[in-house]
Amino acid sequence: MGWVAAGDYEIALDDGKVVCRNAAGRRLKSVPARLADDPAVAGLRQLAEWLERHERQCLADVERWMTRSLPVPSAVVARVWPDPAWQAALRDLVVTGPGGRVAGFLRDADPERGLGLVDLDGDTVRITPETVHIPHPVLLEDLAELREFAVELGVEQRAQQLFREVWHRPAAVDARSTQVEDYAGGSFKELRFLHGRAAQLGYRVRGGHAVCSVLEDGRTAEARVWIGDYESYEETETGPLAWAGPSGGTLRLDQVGPVAWSEGMRMAASLYAGRDIEDEEQAA
Image 1 (cartoon, helix red, strand yellow):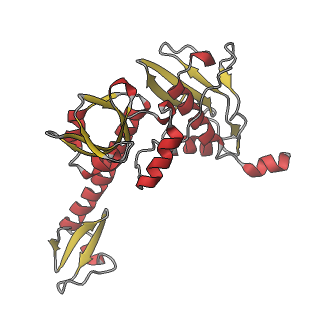
Image 2 (cartoon, one colour):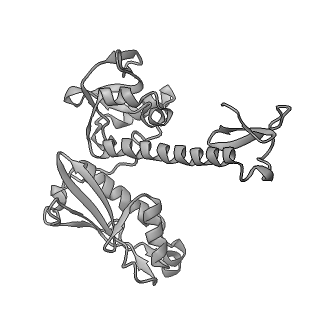
């Protein structure tokens, strides 16, 4: 933490916040009001805001690599690793190498030595593949065992991977059906609350639907949940969940891939969780 002169004081960034100390070196509880318009203070606050946005963007990019099953060049991982924001987003994620075999938990990346991992035997190893995948947890066959091992290692993933909620498509799904009703009927007193919840959860809203797009096996599938027309501020409720293919046509449930299914169900469940419980209890 480097200190910068600001009038008779010195300021610095500590955990994303501007802190201040006096000429005697004593750290103050807050930045004095007289420094509110100081250029150094304004500059540090702008830097803190930029760093926060950068951290969010890095995390969002890593989660997008995971949900879209995109191959990531090892050289890219090594190039961004020195950046604390990128490193925090990538550290301890499970990566897979050629053939989809789990290689281990990512702990380091170096342009010369390759990727440093903790493998499934608990050993520290180095691998040098051209690309790796950060698999969606629904694709990990031994997810329960990996979760247990992660707890033993003290793994803390910033990007939701191992401890992300997953839903598996039932094997005996009705091939004629095009929607899931599990999380339909969640009541909200005002539509704006449901729209606000969708935005807070990171989902886009288009044409009265909350949508979540997934690229899987080179094909785009968009999960859609009806949440109401934005021009109305009356009561609304969550609708059924359905998926659309690249051309916009509705997919049958047996055409939905495992990642698209899991992410669509995750969105529907998250929206439904914010419903008005009191109305349900009164109706019961």
